Length: 234
Image 1 (tube, rainbow, N blue to C red):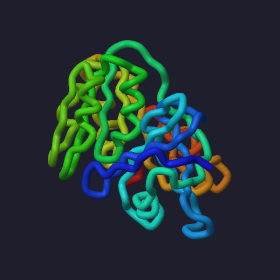
Image 2: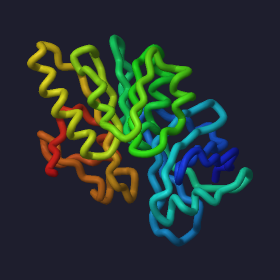
Image 3: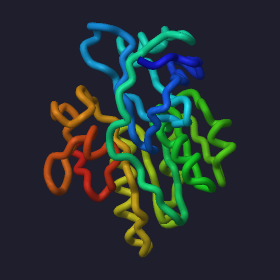
Image 4: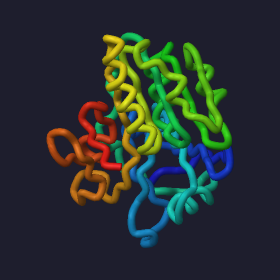
């Protein structure tokens, strides 16, 4: 069991949760959390927003019963914390862009800490949040509200691009990666998939991902994949 340090409302339905824990983790990995006994049946996967020696931070959006129960947590409350799980973002060098859409900005804050001087691009459909925290770490910060943040990113300018957001955004990033070849420079583009998960350890196949080499598991083989690996069906 872990102890809640704080659970701050940042925007409509968006919370910043800090939990006392020394379990750590790497950028792009996630934890399975639950703040209940029997119902809901499944724990909820949350990306690591930041891992410190004495705490782990999460950023989440209330979208269902489980996250609604997270929103009710107060300092001192207990919750079950399992992890870290998954294959996250690599430690890379060169010109780096971090691109997040909506709650997809969550894992990129840890990346910003680990990869200083990255350019950061944050897109929101309605209300921006956590931009001041990202601004402190960015070489350059670009924020877009109501538009398409990928339109602001020139893929030919970077060696590595980390992207996290809804599936249409990830598919669009894959297409921009392919188009960058015409300029003679295609960066390494890493996509963090926000697939539904049940077990978190690769046993149930709920989070199956179609890849060039067959079906893979977002929870164990990912959630981070190279853009060239993933097949988008929609």
